[in-house]
Length: 439
Image (cartoon, rainbow, N blue to C red; front, side, top):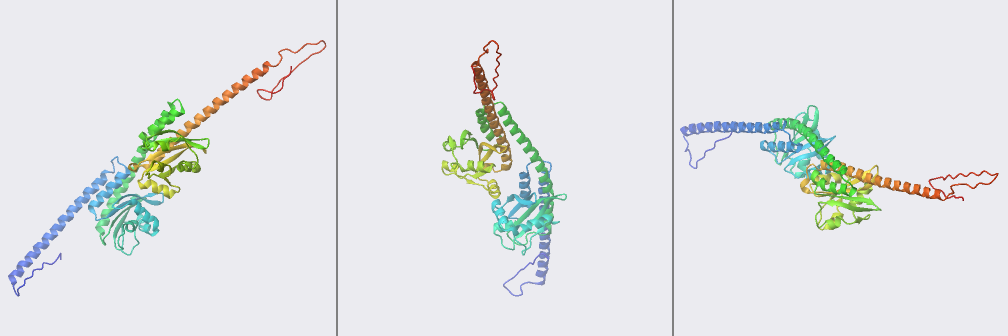
């Protein structure tokens, strides 16, 4: 039974037995046509699923990033299964984090998971399930359903991403209407999850190799710049200019901590109207809170940059906790970041960089590279200080030696001679020079 053919007339007894026979034949033909159409539609859908799987399979050997793999997986699933929101959650240690999403604001979804811990139960149970989990109306809300404001009977399916016995994360789909996912959706989601897990692992290995090569090249370039420069000013000027080009930040500046103040020594790339504010000769404690926070905490500090006037650059909202730091890095907003120039607890200054909102991707890797650059800058500053100390010490030793020679000229070269007397004298100073004389 595929349906009912209903024909009606406003006249009584209008249909004959012959009409009934014709209607039955028509109904049979319509049923066959509907069945064939359903088979055709199913076959087309299966071919579409196969094409999508080939797309994902192609990522197994392609040199693409993890983000590209995640985006392609969700895009192909959108073509084949009904969904309002699709997301991939990946494991970082023992914790799941939202790695990629289509159809919803990632910050709102993460916020929903943090505010309602029970929303994460659906993800946690799916991670250990043997097959994709289909949400029932009585089940707890997931973070996507909570963030999207879906009704209690909304549909959701989640499949674990596994590489052998190693769990990588969870793939989830959600739809605002009920009963959208069944056994066929389970099979398709499981297949996509299996292919996606292998592609993600391969992409991670590729990303890791690329990032390591890129970081090594950037740090080598900075080291060569420092080695080929003749003075500290030349080193700092070169580094603040090449850092934006090497790493992809908007601007860079260096502030040295001397005489209880931060002194602006080099800057590059900051907006023209902001330069008089940031490149002021010196900032005493309290004038530039971001620099003060880096000095007090001895670690990188991130500020949310939302300036309406140039002076706002000196008063950014600071991330003073791990939660704030994570939020700022994931927000896609414009940032002002201070990196300590420090060696073994001795602070020499702060490297300041501006991150634009367009440079949202790979922020964490850029921060790692700039941290390495800041370490090399700190070594250059320390070497300059040691060089100054060595020059001062050599000058002092030379002056002391000269003073000793002068003092020796004050002493008689020959002792007087008296009959029946034998005279001797010894002059030995405690240090290079002394305060005792004789004549």
